[in-house]
Length: 408
Image (tube, rainbow, N blue to C red):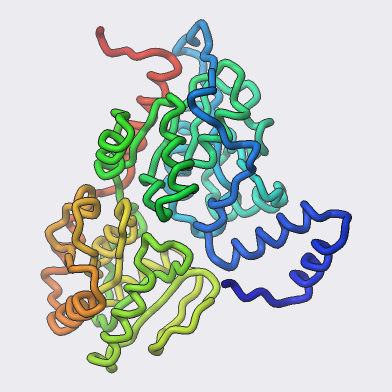
């Protein structure tokens, strides 16, 4: 249950009780609740009328492919980003690759809770200033598109509903989203999103493996990267304590395990500071923390360079946090699983069983043995930049729209 206070929310709740503006007020409250939970729960909302049955969808493609000398118009169908959203940051790296090649991109916001377009545009411009794309709402953002790229299960449904004009359709899949939910409605709808026949681009081998095994889709694959222009070793040598990213709304990041493990870690190592960062501090933590709130990437790199170890639990696709910590010489503690290992291959990861006792013990081992040489090797083990992923995505999109240049 989320606690909501403040006159603004109360006014919206009163509006719900009145006849007028009920739908608007409901969406407004939904937005406020979602904002307090963080970026992930926002993506859970979808209009019923946007849901599609793949067996009943007939989507047209152009009869003639454009000449490769003509630059393309590409619509990215995305949920409105919130500040600091990691999934949107990775998507925007791919947008940059298309823009750098001269293609026009438009961000077509799937916006079921009617948030203000001007405000969302401001967030995009401030949070990702390198992005030049126009920002529009669905379905207007799809007009004139040579291709549209879905970016989450809700947007894949919305693209099938609104993207009925002849165009090419792709799906950039950063995680296997049925795993985000208990077995039930949301998981089933997420699974259906892979059955629309879009050309599917998987971020990494974990996603690709699930798509092959569970859906029977053989996707294109782009590799993970690490932003080593930002995350790197600094001149700081005095490290202490551990760090974790607070995401209570994302069960796949192991928030409960993190809290239980850190509670035990603090009892055993009360002299070691525990640093936490994220959105608004929403929950009581049963141990003292140094709270950093929202941080910029540069501030986060500085924090990683001051700490010995960090928590990077992930029960679906691996979090980017793990390699970003490594790049800064902060050793990530990660739950040991085939999914996590599929795309995180550094020998310097501290793998552990997903129990509070094992996680706390692993953190304890790391703070007791701070080795500078190991940190240098850890930083050297990460993938440098997102260039390979960007180049692969550009090639895939161009081949889908223009036609493959590979000999048949």
